[in-house]
Image 1 (cartoon, helix red, strand yellow):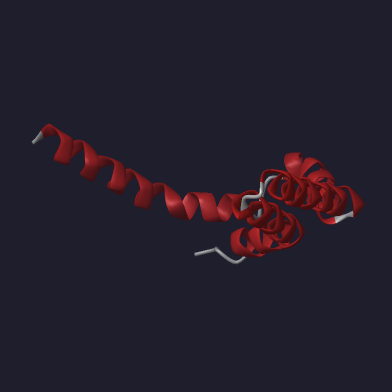
Image 2 (cartoon, one colour; image 1 turned 90 degrees about the vertical axis):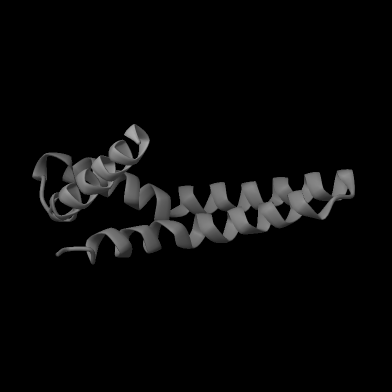
Amino acid sequence: MKAIHLYCFFIFLFFFLVPATAIAATTGADFEDLYNFFYEAATGYLGRAIAIVGGLMGLGVGAATGKPIPALMGVVLAVFGTLGPTLINNLFSSATI
């Protein structure tokens, strides 16, 4: 019975804090320079290089072991590494309530 009450409390707390988190995504000038640095690094040549190297490493491990799963994970890493920062940015910037 206590586990159900604890579970309900955390759900209530989550829904109580979600609007504050959505507003926090667009405010906070203190961290704007840090955000811009990480976003530009992830979407620029550094992020592309990491995505390509991760994809090639996955393909290499998959080819060396003869298993398709590491190769598929390398391709997924490369695709998500390229598209992920933009998707995450759009997700959090459009979540204002």
